[in-house]
Image 1 (cartoon, rainbow, N blue to C red):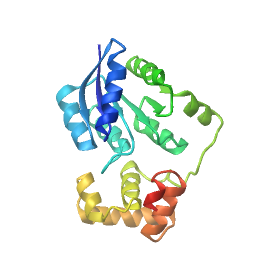
Image 2: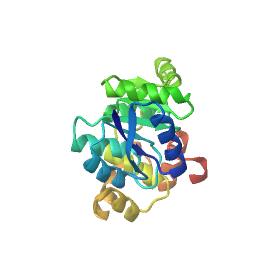
Image 3: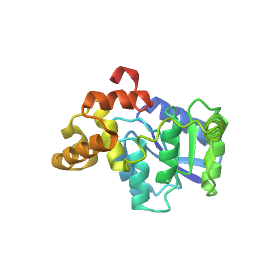
Length: 211
């Protein structure tokens, strides 16, 4: 039996995924979480075989969850299941240690196939994601210079979160976040939060209504 932790901030969506996956017969959803902190706590309790996570959630993103789980347990297996599937986000998720990436626009059986592949230690990309990566479509290398912590703070600030909000979400001091914000601006060559938002919007990191 493959034991799963589902992480998505929409309860109805999680219920639908759970029904789909448990119909397969050899999967059991042992826990569900709506955010990163809750997911980390449940991971420690249940030690699931695979964590299936969305990327876009209130507070920290699924990328931060991948980082934290791998930091806690280098053997942690994560699978991203998200509608936010730009090449940059796929690359970053895989670099952080995710074993698979499935677009939510994929057929339901893709998620099932992905879980079996990840369980066996094999990487899985849903067909459209794999085809786009093979085509060599790359948005921009602008974010390559950012560490995951810097990228997460960039994402939160560009979404309109305050320094205090970022500090709380990432369990950092406000001074640390302010210092990192300055470093991010230097690396990306931008001066204002508005410029951050426009850059994030251009690369599909935030929805248009955030800009």
